[in-house]
Amino acid sequence: MKHIIKFITMAILLILIFSCTKNPVNSVDNPDQGERILFIRNKQKISEICTMRPDGTDIRVISHFKSDDYIKQCYSEAKWSPDKSKILVVGGPETAMEWAPIWIMDNDGNFLYKLTWNGGNAIWSPDGEKIIFSRRKGYFSLINDLYIIDSNGQNERILIETEDRSRFSTDWTEDGNEILITEIYYYLNSSGKLDCDQSEIAIINITTMGIEYITQNNVQDYLPEWSPDESKIVYVSGNHYSKCDIYIMDLATRVKTNITQDPAYYQYPIWSPGGDIIVYTKRSDDSCDDIFVLNLITGEIKQLTKSKLYSWKHYRAVDWK
Image (spheres, rainbow, N blue to C red):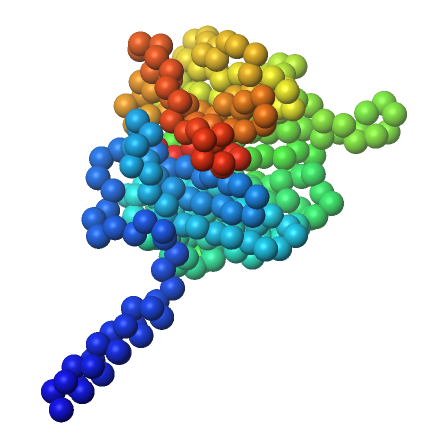
């Protein structure tokens, strides 16, 4: 009788274990210790959210998503909450051609809940209580407004609405007063056709709604992020479809420095927590994207991922904590 009871108990435990839907591939008992780089990698119909150490070792897969749909439903964004307990994710399940969902995920890769839909460029407030994101006015519209929502999915509302420009949120100050954005202005040209200016970087005070333009020139400036002490920004500048470089600008003097001066395509720069290293994506001749780090003190450059070696098509660093 004891053997029967033991067998039944073990059977119940096995059923409970295998009935739990765990998304991660490399689930571990202990959470990540020390600094980690959060990144996304994609190939064909497979998309993964992963972490690694700043030297490129100890890669752990948080979420593995495969879609057999004709529309590639990959992850496009991911950011840790300020306390690193949750991840804000754009894309993945339920993504369609006309819209993408925004999810809240835990560090084990489980989807806790869908925050909202049809959004992108989502950023956490410094206290983790709110999230700002961009949303198109409609499927055929080029205009993106800024929305704000509580991080529990409640109280969604428009933060800033416009009729002639798109705004994309990228970073939030530690005091919670200002956000960095990329802005594109649309207008009808002399031929009566819709045209647009080059993208510019601006700071918006979300209390007064005042706006300060950081760049105003004839090239595309976008993807800005404040340095840890908020005295500088790192951003991308150039032609979005061909040659792009990464710049650092001192906000007090407005002096900018090109830190990637070779004929390549650079994207997605992120500061290290100490502010002495920049991680970014560089595209190779065969259109594969890999992650590199640049030490701003020594000038040393190190490649962290090798897309050709492991058959992944695109790597993109999205956060570093």
